[in-house]
Image (cartoon, rainbow, N blue to C red; front, side, top):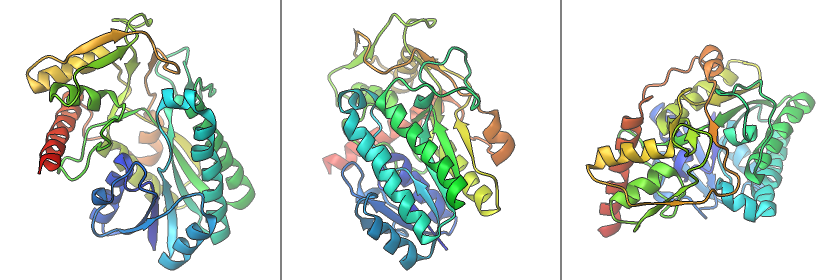
Length: 329
């Protein structure tokens, strides 16, 4: 049996491929390489360059490689960009996910893990936010992911497609062995941007909004190490293969840090200041969102190993230095 990983050349997907191959599992990656990197894929995995919206291709991959599970990462992820180009996000995240699901159902695959997001909650009234909270996204990105969750629910009821949707909070950091990390040069992830700034790859960075209802006026987020997030995926895969019931799970630590606190952690790791500019809010950003993450522990048996902001930041900074050396070579 093999696992099909869509978007496996991207940041989070490449870490999933590493975890699967480390565990001795057969892996095939489907990625169009528009934002991913072929070099980021573990050499033991097979890469098929193509689009998740190509139903015939997906069916062919499933049958050729005896796929019994799909882990779906492929999609667009930038909240402000989704506000500017909502139809592009509905195409890439929702329409193409529907095509992927159709091929998966037709080919008889029963296990499906979906990369969802805390953005489905919008601007929740209480913190932490649990899976029982009624979703109310405030960006097309969040809505596009919620629509895919709804399609999974309906496909489970109609066709018996068993699924786990993992709602990510803010993913950061890099593989502890230094094999992969966030490699997109102009990514918008806060920790990456701050690391690039202290290393001189950006002249400065923007802090979007200082008038939020938080302790220092900047947005509050729950940051999760990418390797801990991937361990939740591995737990979800084992859970589904053992016949676990379909469901939705938050992935976070249950502790929030403000933008300024994160920048402070980067300054501490680097030993120097981050050149930052305070600018107005950007569209689609909630003031605060922190995970209620007991369910993933109780049901999937998830046990995080890297729940420390300084550890996350240090791994991200080490990866940026690695990329600097790689790009200079």
